[in-house]
Amino acid sequence: MTAIGGATHNISWGDTLSALAVRYGTSVDAIMAANSKISNPDLIYAGDSLVIPGANGAPSGGQGPGATTGTGPIADSGPVDGRNAAAIAEQFIGRNAGELKHSDELPMQSWVPNNVNCANFVSAVLQKAGLIDSSQASASVDQLANNLKGDGWQTVSLQNAKPGDVVLMQKNGQSHVVFFAGFENGQPKFIGSNNVNADGSQRVSWGGASGNYEIITPPR
Image 1 (cartoon, one colour):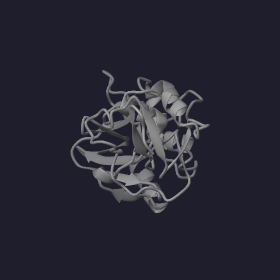
Image 2 (cartoon, one colour):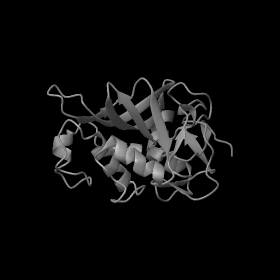
Image 3 (cartoon, one colour):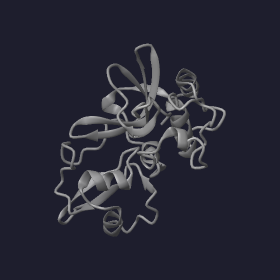
Image 4 (tube, helix red, strand yellow):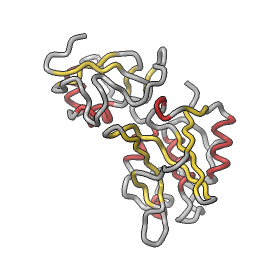
């Protein structure tokens, strides 16, 4: 496929139109207009190619021409849900966990203290993305990790991580969990319910992973 005045992007598992629009400095509507085969912006297929209008072949964020987030295997077939977990989490940026857990927007547990909602948030987002059911969810980081690994989630390298993969860490004796959200300027991005408020309570924000962490990905 030749893109006139743009670039060609090969879709990998975890790609979304919204993320590609940001990466290439364009819009979802423009990508859809350049690719008539897309009828649902939330449904694209791994292994297909997209014309990216107005792109020069190098995505914004410092990655090379035609690069995708991570270098893991492309799914052989089947749809890639545009509402992946990282994209869903991003919709709640700036929201306090203490408020969000009492809304009906995510299936969070309302009893969880406001300073330890990281697993509560990640579990709820995974449920909304259709990646787990309520029996697999947990407000405990360690229990959530055990549940996911027991269901076939496997450790992957940062280079092979996909947006929406789960990031587990231990710091100062405390467990924490966030989502991997791709790369920006060559650096990994993370998103989750983090202790960033002045009173120590959590708010959905970028970041949350540092030092040694483990990234796990669902069965592909």
